[in-house]
Image (tube, rainbow, N blue to C red; front, side, top):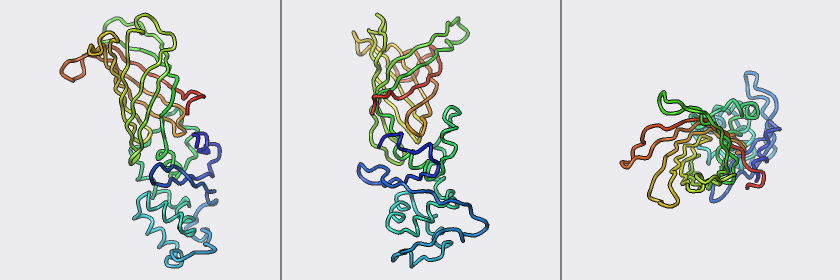
Length: 268
């Protein structure tokens, strides 16, 4: 499924992730319309409740049961019982989904408009399947130098290739490499080694810059942090560059700045 298939243009689309080996979002339904007015009477009754539905005919009891389930169990019971599916997708159960991703979903003003209409089940589904694997076009600005020393801000751009591992509890490790657009003589002598972790829709990345002539010779270290849009198409963040250190501790700051990146059209 492409990231465009997450239905940002249709706030009624709800995506339910299925937790299992190499499985992604496999179900989408229309959100139940209308709001509760002091009761659950507007919730549709299941036409064929089945064994589970007949055991828990009272909506209030069904909601109480759902509050004790983890995301995996919520999806499984929703798949096998239409009544529980109707209840779990109703806006009154949004509070059940929020704790599953609190402190792991960050809103960047650049992406706020397209994510504002998503409900908690949709947000969780997006985080569950979010991947940064692929080729990204990075543009940035180096804005500050060390201390009070004179510094001339400059812009830069390059391609970044990410390889993300499988997500586990909304987290995943990744590695990558840099592809320079217009290599200069100095850039051509440098090699970037990229490693990091994605948690929710936030990533932290460590870039080691080494000399191609001497792979053991460290030139500098970049520490980057960014927020990724839920559709997996954009990211924006900040970075600091540090002098190399032989004791494993970051050296003195060299420069810092900001960056934005967009997934390349031909990237999968």
